Amino acid sequence: MKNYNYLVFNLHLLLICTACFSCSKNDDPQPDPDPTPDEEFYYKLHRVENLAMETDDDNPTEAKSAVYFNLATQQEVPNAQAKTMRWDLSFSGLYNSFIGGNNGTNATNFGYGGAGKGGILILEKPFDEVTEVPDGAQFKLGSGVIGTDDAGAFGEGIGWYLYDFGGTILGNGTTEKTHVAYALGASVTTNDGTVIPARTIILKTPRGDIAKIKMISCYKDVFTADKWFKDTPHMYFTFEYLVIPAGSKHFEIKP
Image 1: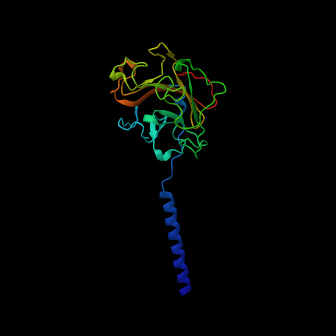
Image 2: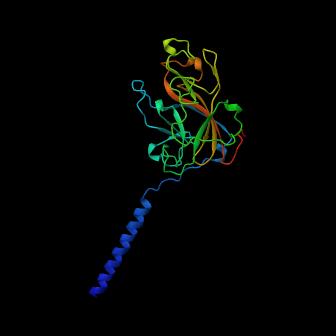
């Protein structure tokens, strides 16, 4: 009888432990799967206005935390999810003005170690004239690879904006036109007569979708160069884009 009671007690204890373990497993929060865009997202013109970046004019060269952005949700993604497929492009470097894609194979990419297969390149061509993905497109896989243009100060190759440090490249030389960043979504003509072609960014997302992007402004609520001044609230990015599914080649807007 003693052995029987001992056996029953142990059996009850085992059942209780099993139930508790099962409840504990069920109560553990499980990470949400990486979201995929709806079909309606593709072949549409999308616009983002005033995406705010951290700025500090007293310490402009001090590195700020990168910003990760999802094109489908038009939302920022937390830094803790940098190695996930949840973001499509990053903003980092000087005033967070340098852009990159999400790639898990490149050691200089914020997504390194993740599953992303994204990249980025830039064309000297207006947004509306970019009708297909360039043949043999060579995407850059690092982070912060497209920013200041060589036509302005501190240029690093073909960029999406021209920085007029002294206000004499595109500005009128007045103090209020110094330190202005001119987005090159449209072509501009410098004071010496040089025509700077419009730029269009081509982005491969971590899933292999392709976006074309026109950067319009980095100033809050103002989208044309005549209203950009030194003291205009800045590093509020406005841009438009169109995304086509992985494997597609032609950029077009569909109803």
